[in-house]
Amino acid sequence: MTQKKAKMILDKHFQVAEVDNRVYGSFIEHLGRAVYGGIYEPGHPYANEKGFRMDVIELVKELQVSIVRYPGGNFVSGYNWEDGVGLKTNRKRRLDLAWRTIETNEVGTNEFVELD
Image 1: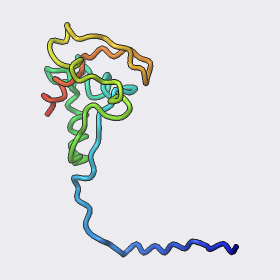
Image 2 (image 1 turned 180 degrees about the horizontal axis):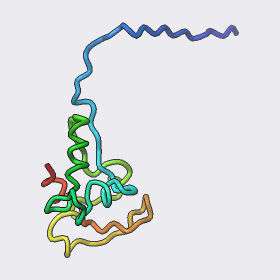
Image 3 (image 1 turned 90 degrees about the vertical axis):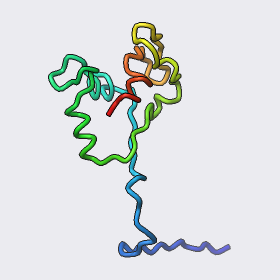
């Protein structure tokens, strides 16, 4: 049995079509300091009245991200959107099984919907 060799030819000038910028989205994940101490940090000099860091939000806007998904990443696998609605004082704290941290749900569905 003879083996055939694969061959690939790349041409950096070959283009099928323009790539729509809406393809380049992003997500917010409760990992490390992405949310708490990242986009959300009440008391920070650049935080708005809701606790969101406006300097960080402006940097994200500069990237011209077409869409931001929430929640995103591996965090979504254990997230229940109902845990992030209503009064913050009534929200349940839960163990995030992926990261083995306590999720306070201080930032949740309500806050993301109101984020501009």
